[in-house]
Length: 243
Ligand code: NAP
Image (cartoon, rainbow, N blue to C red; front, side):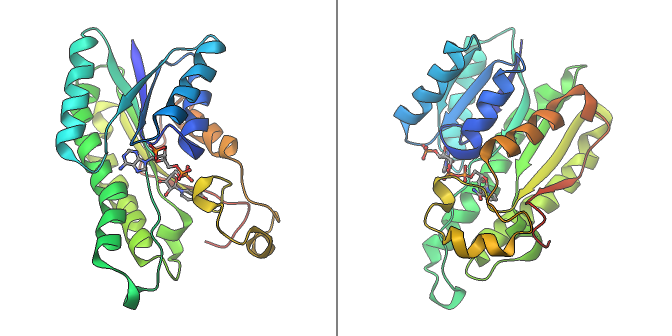
């Protein structure tokens, strides 16, 4: 069986992506860091609509946790492999740079960038061995393309993720593994709930924040056979906001 692993699948974009992939008949592994209740709720939604989902708790930014959780999963699933990897887990710790505590710099980069490295490196060998290949989808951001004041840590992490996406895509293309990044603008989730939505939406040509389900539909497309010749791309989804 070909599984999907969605990091940060307990809330926001990850939650919608887990549900949307399961609706395609793909069994889903819901990763989360600490919010067990939210992760269980996502699993319940999927299972109650006839899909298959299981939980896998680990901190993407901790190599030991990533390895031991995925080792255990593979031991329990000898005939299965993770063909779809959505590197979605991410955090924001905004402040202007001259006041930014060192910890906030490292935490944001560790989650988005090192998390991508630890999880993807661990799963790539099996994806590359299987003749059906695989899909790696990295959740970048508009902030990683244009830079956002107050987010030097986050913009740096997401810009680096975009660079890594382009490099890795070329490394694994011949093995039928595609690697793409998605760059959302403002999407309604817990991550953006403290932002002044009424002010910010005036900047967006569509005059609204996006919905998690709209991003999830894009992930479903990238994971589909229809997207088999798309790799190394950064696909924006932002309601027309300048990039
Ligand atoms: P969110 O609502 O804050 O949810 C974050 C998710 O990531 C939660 O499931 C959380 O798990 C998980 N997570 C955080 N740190 C983790 C770690 N170290 N290990 C494992 N899981 C971890 O965020 P979101 O808005 O859905 O954002 C998802 C991704 O999209 C992020 O990479 C974000 O940077 C990117 N993005 C979001 C927007 C937006 O407007 N929302 C725009 C551009 C890009 P717990 O529930 O256990 O805490």
